[in-house]
Image 1: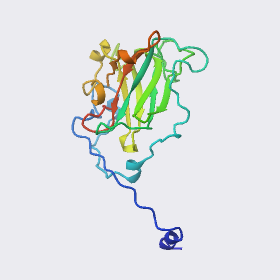
Image 2 (image 1 turned 135 degrees about the horizontal axis):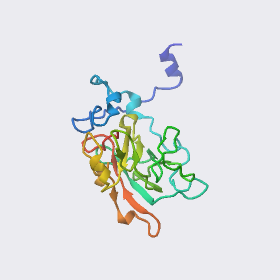
Image 3 (image 1 turned 180 degrees about the horizontal axis):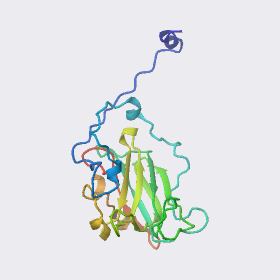
Image 4 (image 1 turned 45 degrees about the vertical axis):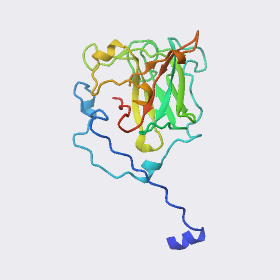
Length: 215
Length: 34
């Protein structure tokens, strides 16, 4: 059976999905892959410039982790089921916005962090700080119709990260965002204001504040 | 990448509130973390 006959048997083919091309990052919009003061970028960074490729259909249309894909929301990291986590309770909330400042509804937000003592619940973390039996450190939810998310957690501690001798990484929460399409995927971290460790931690671009849609 | 302390987001007698808005792509995009 030819493809034409198969199509006529089930009616006209569906209209092609509208393609949206995302604008390319402009110089300075994102930090460079290689920044030698941040030692681990030396191994991670590509040695050749990337090749520009056209966006594919799946990059511009999905997957989008629409409602139902994320499973059960985990928005309270302070009570994983047994007791209450140690540390300063904090609410972390905000909006997920697209490049034109429009809120992105029903999009998956995932966060992970160490506990208040600076220790991740992970086999690879050998930092000599206590594990909190009442803290896992992982959350996920879909943004609401206004693009808002909200988690209850504890403030993470700082931990040594061996970038240089006696280097301590400022307290932070990791974020994974998808947005409306896979091409908008972003992994980033949230830092806390007025942390003295920010001044001594190398960053290839200045730490920016998040104020109301300015990143 | 630095959040703002937001007093109105804090919950009385319970938790401090921090706001972190995220922009995906574009001129004002949130930098990727390293």
